[in-house]
Image (tube, rainbow, N blue to C red):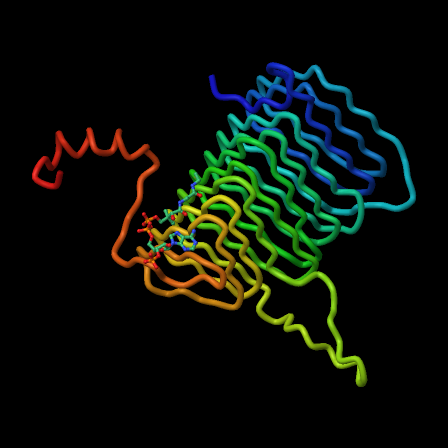
Amino acid sequence: MRRADFGGGGNAEPLRISFFGNNNTIVIARSAKLSGLINIFGDNNSISFSPLSQFSSGIYIGKKDDLVRSSNLCFGEGCKISNSNIDIVAGSNQVLNIGNNSQLNSVYIEQPGKSEAHIGHNVSFFIKSQIRIGLQSELNIGDNTTINEIFINSAMNSKIDIGQDCMFSWSVVLFPDDCHPIMDKETGKLLNSHNNNNIHIGKHCWIGYGVTLLKNVTIPDNSIVGMNSFVINKQFDEPNVIIAGSPAKVIKRNIDWDRDIPQVYKEKLKEKEPALL
Ligand SMILES: CC(C)(COP(=O)(O)OP(=O)(O)OC[C@H]1O[C@@H](n2cnc3c(N)ncnc32)[C@H](O)[C@@H]1OP(=O)(O)O)[C@@H](O)C(=O)NCCC(=O)NCCS
């Protein structure tokens, strides 16, 4: 039976969702299993439980004056969310979609205003991640992507697109905008660019340990970003490359990569293409 599973399991802390406002909707997919706490302060908020859901959580419904309005959370079938915190405590029109069979472990998601996050199907957050999606900003994560540890922070008008089947190591930082203004000391003119607040990561990319991607960056399909690399204002366009260094540059072309460890890959190659060994 497919189900969504919130909290529970091992020593994980339960999920906590807080809503302060009016006209918000939470949809929990078929066969959901919740063991978290949902706080709702406001009017006309709705939670819809699909058939077969099991509910052992607390729901607290109160009233408050500073309100979130018209936000929408959808958790797909078979989602498993534990030790996580989703904070939607101000503003309006936040959208958070988590696809079927995705797992979020120790993820803190903050959407302080109108913003959208679409996490695809079968996406896994394994260790610990912190995600803040700023006002009028968007985060899209493609199906089958896996993330060990990521820190995402955007302030306003930013977009992060992550393709399908990407693999993120630990300590990865994505900052699509600078968050604060830098101005000319004499005139007060704004100096830091704020028009290309985008990070685009193609499909099947491997983002190594300690990588930092800042504003206006494109990582092409099937590529690797090497450990501790730093990329800003750079659109790499040739697919199947290794990008590394600070500032990062292409260090190898015509590559591909696999999730197996090299020894296992070698064994597979022995069976399929022994001539390549
Ligand atoms: C990116 C990486 C996979 C490339 O491996 P590789 O193809 O075997 O690279 P090579 O050792 O042939 O290095 C090629 C050149 O790039 C340089 N280089 C490689 N990785 C680099 C990095 N992360 N930063 C800066 N330069 C790097 C090498 O010094 C070498 O330079 P040279 O030609 O001047 O001597 C590897 O360096 C790496 O970063 N591995 C760690 C990935 C990771 O984070 N794993 C965590 C588990 S998910």
